[in-house]
Length: 74
Image: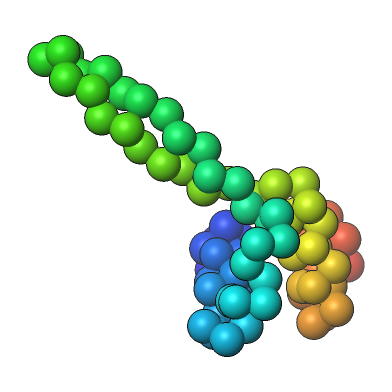
């Protein structure tokens, strides 16, 4: 499993669990506007992990015994 997919699944693991992690600043929504070649514009939304969110995920996954590859023994 790719790490980014695993983190997203971890964040959306259970609806009850998800609720306790919402509104803690772990993610940020970034809106932007794209202008198409036909002159029309469309607005898109991108969700990104914040520093606080990455730190939370690191410690929570480490608590569960899941380490980043750089910290795993060969």
